Length: 216
Image (cartoon, rainbow, N blue to C red):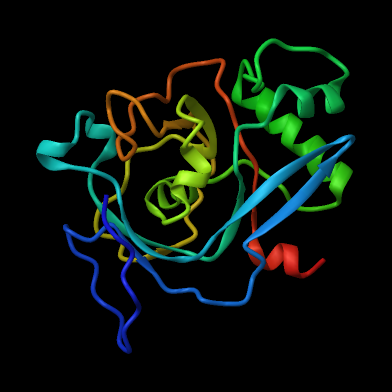
């Protein structure tokens, strides 16, 4: 795990040994709450910056994670845990086992997030894969992943990373595909590797861009 570095005047160049560079120091609230019925979802700020996304060479147990490529993320909020069974009950009226709600398919998770967005009148969504990977390397990772180490759905359709496209701002994956990305923080493949996209019954969390919160 690499430590976040202070920005310099011209900005350091990304290289194979640098995973994350924090740049955004804007005055956003560090934590906010999203109310769903009787439940409050805690949202944690992840400050935007640059990172080398992916994992390759002798560190990659899956070719799906290659090649390493630079991305830039604007600041966003992500729920500090998976969506709980209590929140799911507020939305559906159906009880489920366990503290956290496991959606059978990506569509099930996405539809539930759409219900939350409608209820709150906010553009809530599943985290993009880039946001998930960035948060997994960011200083707030202990808040976000300490108790959440299973597989979780991301917004993106699954596709191999394309090399040589330069820095990409807020990537959201391809417009279509056969399946969606699933990532996990603590698994045998490691948090930076993509090797879980075929599993079902995964957890999920919500995300929103910081600017979309400030507009409200």
